Image 1: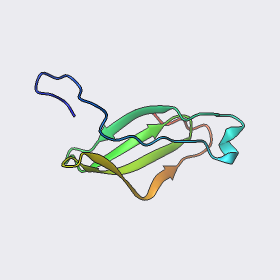
Image 2 (image 1 turned 90 degrees about the horizontal axis):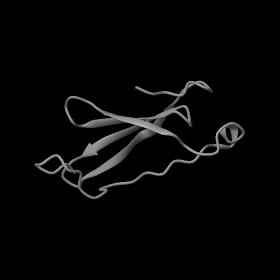
Image 3 (image 1 turned 90 degrees about the vertical axis):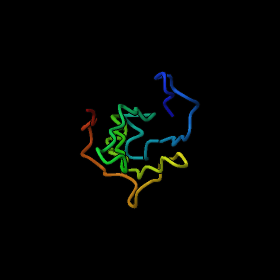
Image 4 (image 1 turned 120 degrees about the vertical axis):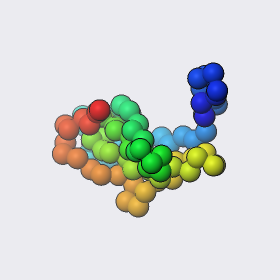
Length: 84
């Protein structure tokens, strides 16, 4: 959450990522790069430069939480390293 003065509140949700077996040879940890929220504030895309994935979430601001989409990510080509 973001307070009225712009300060960040406590962590509301957390989704750790781990590399798959085929990624482990070149990447031992995930590298979250950014999260982009759509203009309707209903969806979020997390770019992971280490896993070569776009993680897809539905936003629930009332909870607040990130709900993984089904499927939970879009796999990109090896080495794509998505970022904004």
